[in-house]
Image (tube, rainbow, N blue to C red):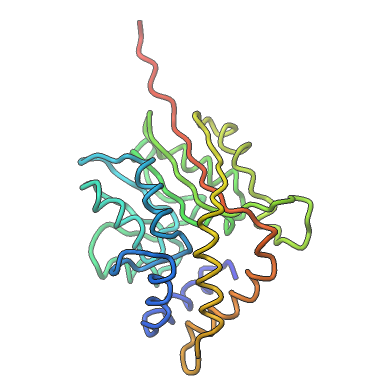
Length: 248
């Protein structure tokens, strides 16, 4: 479920399923032309964009960008540029069809130079990494002094609860971010985001999925997610890189 091949199939299925895209956009309150890659709602996207506070001329890295919808929207609002990186070649191809700079890479190795971007966003993807510390370190590496990081994800309510998949129990951003050298770290619960998420999964289950592989996949995932829904908490993690210390 976490391989590039799995996501290649998922994104290929989405191209032939306007019903799935329409359901996601409606329930998550997303802009009408945004191609979603995850479960971040419109209000959640507003929070991410507000924290990153990008300015014209700056560069945003959308790490694990999928089809590029979230990063493209944040960059559009700020009149800045965006680089999207994802390990699914199919997702990157779909993102490139709408223009922009999108590349194949991984969460742990995005391929960008050191200190080359002003902000990084990682939307609902960190759980897929083999090494969470490596991803946090990669974000720190590519950010310029004063750069900002926003991560949306889920963490286990109880990290010892083995009914929650390990990929979520391993997430501990309040510890990982300072360890990587980030400052001004905040990891805040966002229970209000969960309302629209639950609505999306429940409506997916109530939809006739006959002949629609993307909807079938959504329904399979909905059953898995809803089975442990109350055992995960929704979080927004934000942090920044220290400013360069100027000589006296």
